[in-house]
Image (cartoon, rainbow, N blue to C red; front, side, top):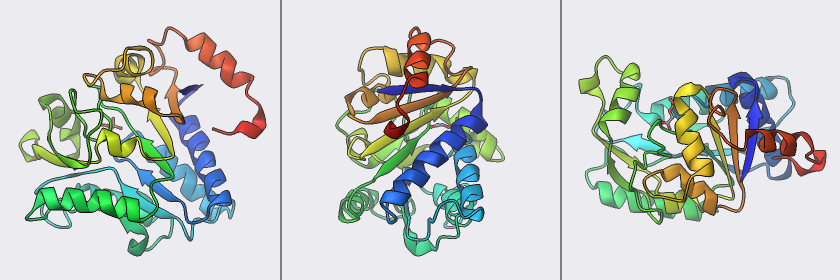
Length: 260
Ligand code: PGA
């Protein structure tokens, strides 16, 4: 696992947007797995800026969703489908045809989950999966004690996650209890995992995931199993890392050709 400590969220966004641009240069129709929440927004803003500047061609890129609320009315502004279309697909000038996501309004949720795993495989698999991390260590909506081998399925949110996400809704009561999430096993099939964490509230979850034991109790620790996982953290989110100095020295000495 590579850990890169950046000064702030904007620098993290710029670094990851550059990695996406590099990927698209070599593979213009790459499938990008995108995450929602506040943390990845600087990535999408930096990437959209690169598109406007003509520094990267995203016209053939494809975008897929990591997770989704179950049971929100179709078109609800906080459904993750709406968020991804608003924050990623539209600013990059992509059409909805370039977008893949699970159906959180399906009558048969189990079938919708299986269909999404199949759709990802049929699309050739995810080339680069962006991840955030919950204060409880979740990735996607894989809450603590999710199977490390799990596939896309329905999960129940913890009270902590519902409280963390209540800021996007008018009240806590409106935050759904159920979600569809790519499983940890599904996420681990992406060719490159890139997790961005910013702010002190994420410091403990980051330290447990990067330096703690592999454990279903800390779902993001599953990144330790992946051959190409990159964790980008700002100084605040890095503040509980014991090996911070080593990570800094390693990145400073990294050969330029190696990229993320
Ligand atoms: P956040 O969410 O970026 O809004 O903190 C991260 C997550 O819950 O995965």
